Length: 240
Image (cartoon, rainbow, N blue to C red; front, side, top):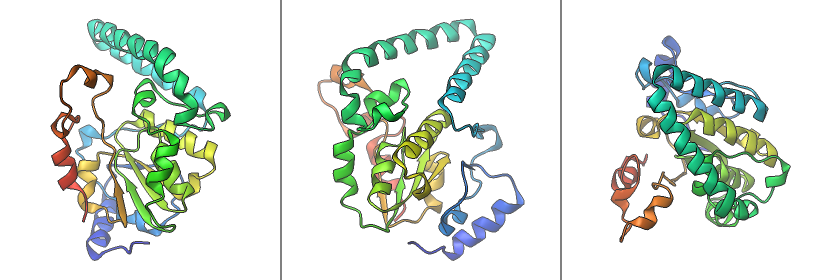
């Protein structure tokens, strides 16, 4: 397990004097997590509900939709159209592959629309995790709904799972509980590009957003098409 560096200790002392930019969602199990501190501006901070049940996720979605509609009816219509398109895609192609994404899907695994086409199939995630040694500290930089983090934890690693979308973090926490590995994963709502300078690990796993199914419309798919940052930026921001 990685040791806390002197710089991390300084960061911890600073974070205790002010509000944190990231939110730890459950009891801290690993001493190295103290190195995480406040780096994002106050305007960018986002709170996450700590409910354990999928019902709370639906309630959060409904509230978000109401807020969007109150601010801009046109934006609400656009969001609704996007959601409908995503749900239609999930109902067809991706639904048929649900057990390849998560073998325990019927045990209560939850995903949002984006998660259906961005999750790593479980068999592939397990092969990727096999490259890590049990006991390694792994940073999953773009955790999404938790598929890769779960497999690293099942391998016996300790995982810091970073995800900027609070909704996805709630889903990932729930899914880790389904697989019984929640005690080996610390989920953090935060921007990996801001946190990277303060993270130290034995292994950093990168599976960044890749743009979704629309990639098939491009004649060639390259690293600079990754969103919101291109693959070159992602590669060189990793902690060494």
